Amino acid sequence: MTSRAGAAGPRRRRARMLVAAVAAAGALAACAGPTGGGAEPTATASSSPTPSPAIEPFTHPWGPTPEEVAAATEEAAAMTPAEVAGQVIVGRLDGTDPAVAADLVTELHLAGVMITGGSVANLEQVLALTNGVQEAVAADGRDWPALLSTDNEGGSVQRLSGDVGPWTTFPAFAVAGRAVEHADSDGGGDPGAVTEAPTDTDGATKEPGNSTAVVTDAYAAMATELRASGVTVDWAPVADVTVPGQDVTIGSRAAGSDPAVVTRAVTAALEGFLEGGVLPAVKHFPGHGSLTADSHAALPVLGATDAELRTQDLPPFEAAVAAGVPMVMVGHIDVTAWDPGVPASVSPVAYQVLREELGFSGVTVTDSLGMGALNAVGGPGEVAVAALAAGADLLLNPADNYAAHAAVVAALEDGTLDRDKVDAAAGRVIAMMRHQAELAERAGPVGPDDVGSAAEAAAALSAAGQS
Image (tube, rainbow, N blue to C red; front, side, top):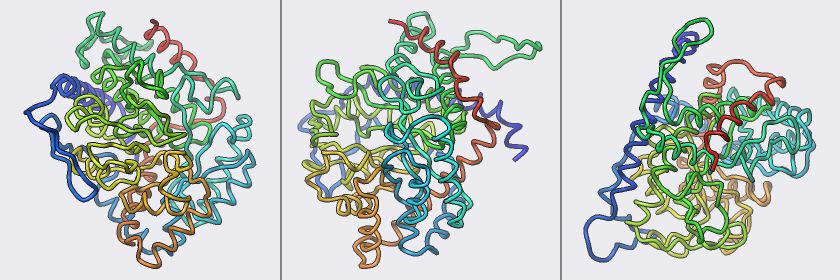
């Protein structure tokens, strides 16, 4: 591990170069527009969407090597059905009691839990909860970290903020988008443009900056505070492209309405999270920014043509895959051009586009499974099995943890779910969490005193993104 840690500087420079290249490619894709003519093809659940020339598959590594994933999959295959079912579930918490969270993970062998507003009282309680879950995971015989997750986007969605404890409150992600736009207007439009080569106080030359560095630095600082609180995964950033006047739920959670701007903000934020040792997940694939219904309450319909999706909604996700994002969250969205009437989170076609066309090899995770958009699919058990059968690797926040787990176990035992497929999903999750441990080691030790340390970086982002 010493050699990897020593390579942190070169890794960061290579990462910034990659972000620059990806952002440039995303900008081109966003401006490409539909190609060809005639009616757009419509995919069904048993057919594949026709690829668009605007998108080429990417194979950029997402963290773990294929060999590491294969080894983790073998470990999953040796588990009991109850154990492997737990490895593909991130549990819903009820209340703030750390013992309840630890017992839940122990009983169901869960990969981890999701920390929501209702499960946060203060820093001491969050640390007790995260430490307790890690201890439960270790006692279950695992040598990889628990998936301790939360929603920290900034703005209106930030579970660990100054409103509930010593955490730094960050601006909405729209501010990151404006920071990118302002850099463009100031002549920093080249994502890889070097502004200067400043020096540290000891005279050493620092890494050259670019027009997205303030975004990367802010989300690296957020990740430091999250990791100091015991969090290993953040369900952010939002990769949706908002459509003002039409978008009823995303709004300022998105970086903007220009796919190229959103692309650059997303890839910069991803770099920051990974640099800080916390795993990010882009959401809500294939895009929630133009929808006129809120998936928390009902199933929204995305009626764009296939070509429109590929020029408006998909470029930020495409770029995130190219930049090595470890997770993509699939939304509860009826994509009529792909699989009409079926939420993307339980649609094989949506996962096929993500895997085969965008080339994503990391972990697919559903949006929270307790949302109203899934009511027509069935109860918590039916929803869990449908999502795994469609291609999900992780089930997030089931409405009923026990019902979801029992249904997955039963489906494995009666053959409704293919055991090899679930083992592969669990293997990707296990390998990813081992990779998170490596990232955390590389980022360096943190402690409770680091909570609140991101104020300067958040202020810099706010200043760069002032209207």
